[in-house]
Image 1 (cartoon, rainbow, N blue to C red):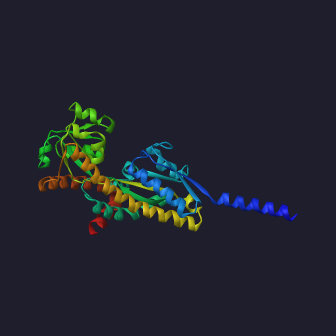
Image 2 (cartoon, rainbow, N blue to C red; image 1 turned 90 degrees about the vertical axis):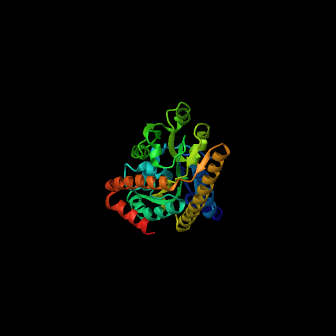
Image 3 (spheres, rainbow, N blue to C red; image 1 turned 90 degrees about the horizontal axis):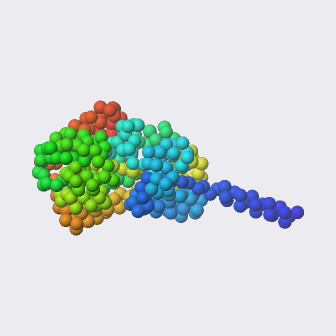
Length: 322
């Protein structure tokens, strides 16, 4: 009798252990070799260690589980317990998601961090209403101007064939008097080779990946904006964890955020060095070009604030006071 009772008790204990272990999915749209994904993979490993194996997170890279536009909805509905999104992609849903896509509002890593701090409380409130928690966010490298000829001011971009890949980049082209042409990244090399475009704005990473240096020899490091990827958690899934596991997850998230920003800065320098090695000249923008582009930014901030309303104004005001 005692032996049977012992076996039954052992079975119950095993059952409790199995029940206590949570298995989560974390979809992201980026390849496994992308620095954001590498950071997430490290984060998942850190969570495993911090929770003593009680929370296992499987990272699904390269849109393998959900496509980029589906990830936020998947986390919100609980189809995935976590997910990574590019915040600016959701600006049409709510203008505040696009705060870090406003050109020339935050033009350095330090400024982008301050803008994030100003945006964060409003972002957290909105995500909470949608049943989610913001775990952490990491900036992409900053955006600069690739252009065939040397430029000293925005006037030098007048009439230039300008690649547009989003409403914001098309609007910049219009405001500087360039000719916006819609070209997606997959078609970028071909568009440069055939003279369809002579200039565009992006990060050093895109410039290197698309071998822009084979066609365009100048990059102006305007650091125009630094969009962020955010890692979101489904609130019900988080609340179902015990306190120690929650603490382990939050600690690993804070470490991933710090590490991610440092890696982004490092990668930005690496990409610019690679462009230089391949024959591209990296220019600091002239005082005139900075002034001209700031005017473009001011116009676009006003246009964004008209849509974002008091919430947007409060963020910009808080950011400017920092």
